[in-house]
Image 1 (cartoon, one colour):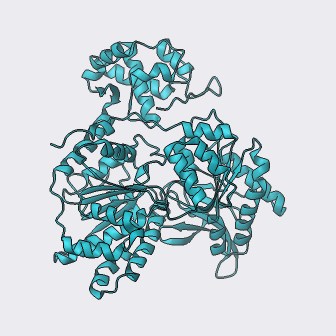
Image 2: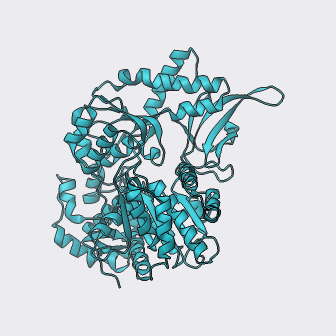
Image 3: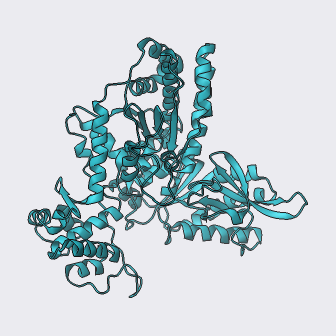
Length: 601
């Protein structure tokens, strides 16, 4: 549960409910509730005829919970989370809400000793119900002989033992999860699974399988395409039988998309799609990468759009940051499945790291399990893979590093070498927790531009200056530019030789050129938030941790940042900040995990 309080910036701060008094006004003035929380709760109370102020406060806290990423609110935890307020006795408070007009009119729901807004309760029940229904379906038919031969060829030897076991589990299951940290072979496993499923269809005399690949963002989808294509090429290299090669080869043409596009984006709705229970997706297999970023709403929409016989494969790291929207679905599914005696989902957890070196691996594992001493030891090991800068003066420490990388991008872009500019951009990422403030992206983008101007002697009055690194922040289906895509403004010329500037964007279909004026919502990307970095990687990562007071300083945030690195990690922050990050976890109130412990029906 988020315990972050906000502070008004002026008497006219839009988060202030200036006309509110009593307990709601007190909690608003204290920074617990925003004006939006109060107004939504008041509107619900007015519609339901609710007079009990404590019940309206509970509704406002439920609104706050969703705004903070939770699905519901536990009234029992409020006194500990926000001390200094005269909170009602939790048991009686919950009973009052359960018997209130708000509950009778279905504005809120009391379930599992928590208070839900009705919509999110329905979504949670829907996800659990759809998973229960899928678990009751018979397992897919599998030819054991074909599977055994395929497993031995695609995952040969002891080095592939984990992936081989996971692949067999997935092939034999209707609903499955493959989880594990970066570099544990998740992509290798799913590519092998696709090949095995294609071979099963061919052996049964069926038509080629229809596969839908998707990820939450365009950048994640592009990385998914590149990684699966490479893994399939390696499988083809180990496959000598012409008939098997003919079955596997078409898989290389699969094009991943965003989850929104897979479900059928509608311009008139943010939460409804063209595919649903009455218009199901046509695929035999749906594979979702970076599933930790999928919200409760989108998981519900995905499950309702599946045919009963469609295999669903969720792939992701359950220890990473969760969705920006409400819910921590993958983490709940993994935890609930591990605890259940009769799980509804087949779970495979990959543990052996194959990508980065031992020190980055030790740092990531220390963060994953919450061992602060192991994290500090890895940071202090003196390895060339991991550098620790325990300083309070981050600007002085990082100026030469940030300037060097910004200059490399600028010089290549000035020379019109888009490939070199994109390579320079991908060689390093400066990751921040916040968008604003001294540890925020906007501050560090300004630092980078100031230092670059001093280093080059140039001025950057035009926003679209040559060498400006770009981060796309919203999908634009007209141009094909998607949220999470990155790029650079480069010098170019028209066929007539007139100098122009072009935005080169590296999207799902590779680098594409656009006039800067054609782009919609883009930000400068000398620095980017850790949330935005999910689903991407860079050769070297610099992690700028915020101070201890930051509510965003959590283990999941730190772990996600560190695991974006391919070869090197640099961490900026004191030991106290490091230890605080390891000790804090993202906890989102949800009943999904508990619902997964129910018996199959």
